Length: 146
Length: 79
Image (cartoon, rainbow over all chains, first blue to last red):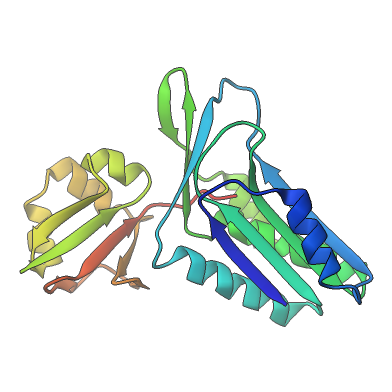
């Protein structure tokens, strides 16, 4: 029902999605979101840091809130930590439901909260060195939609 | 008798390390022993505190005991 993981090594999003979908044959729809490290703007690497006492417990609480709000058959949240390079997957969220609207809304809600409320800190490496990324106003506005 | 301060995100750069061992006691006294520029950043209004993994509503009145871990959490940027 709820599969929430924090990974310090790379993962295969298509394999994760295949397993998740196979595990919920009764669901009429599966909506997924994949976030990957963007290529361009001189970004050579991206690092996500976390704080173990808060990060995974917070992600589990988020999953519980999603499951309480929408009628889902299953919810998958996989999030990377550590150093990644362009095109590496960062986050995969998938929601399985009888009806697609619940799945769309649940995945959207989960992503907005992962971006602006979960305990992650991101820095990017360019030829100038490492630089911490501050949250964007847009992320906070996205959260206000809910 | 020591406690730990944990610095997340950009605060790690400001502190020059991800954590620091400090003597136990009131937080205000501990902060007074740090570089003032760092102390100002740690007390920034958007920095949250977590004591032994539990978020605090405010920094006022925090007293660190032996083996306590106090984390300074700047605004997050995930996904």
